[in-house]
Image 1 (cartoon, rainbow, N blue to C red):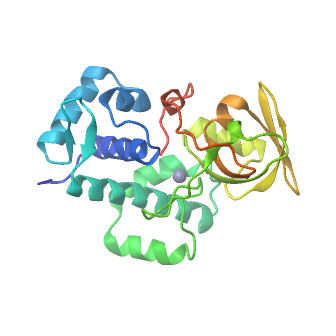
Image 2 (image 1 turned 90 degrees about the horizontal axis):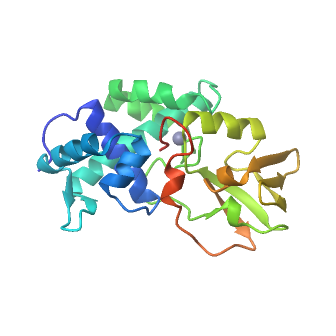
Length: 237
Ligand SMILES: [Zn+2]
C-alpha cells in the first residue's frame, strides 16, 4: 500500500513518471534521469524508495509501472498542477508561459475546498493552458508538427515539453494551443504555420515537441526520448 505523505521530491518523481506514461515513453530510471536532469545514482535511490513505499513496481527488465494507488496519486498531482495553471491564466490573467513555477509553488498549499472552487472558476476548460488534460481519459492523440507536410491544415493540441524557456520561445512565435492554420513551409530548419491573424515560424527541433491534429495527417509516432530535454534546465509536464 502507498502510505504516508509524499515529500516534494517524491511528487516531482511521480509527476515525471506520469508524464512519460502519457507520452508513451518507456518508464525507466534512465528516462527519468534524462527528463529531470538528475544523476543516475540519485534517481536510482528515489525510485527504490517509491517502490518500497508502494507507489511503483519494477519488472525484472527494470521497466517501471505504477501501482493502482501510485497511479491515482500521480494523476491527482498532475491534474491539480494543470488546474492551477489554467486558473492562473484564465482567472488571474497571467501569461501562459509564466504560470508553471507559480503553479508548482501553489500546488502544495491546496486544500480540497480550494480545488473545488478553482474547478468551478475555470468553467468549461478541460486542459492546462499548454493543452494537457486536467482529468485523465481526455487526451486527444496528436502527431508532431515536425511530421506534417506542407499544405496540411493543422490545429495545435499541446506542447509536450513545458520547460519554461521553451514556453517563452513558443509564446514569442505566436503558436498556441487551439490555434488553427496551414503549414505553409516545412523546411530542414524551420516550420511556418499561417493562421488567419498571424504567421508563426518555429524551429524544426521545437516542432518535434508540438502535438497537432492535421489534415492530411502523417502516421502517428511516439516522441523521441531526446525530446525530453531540449537544452533546458527543467522538464515539462
Ligand atoms: Zn501546463
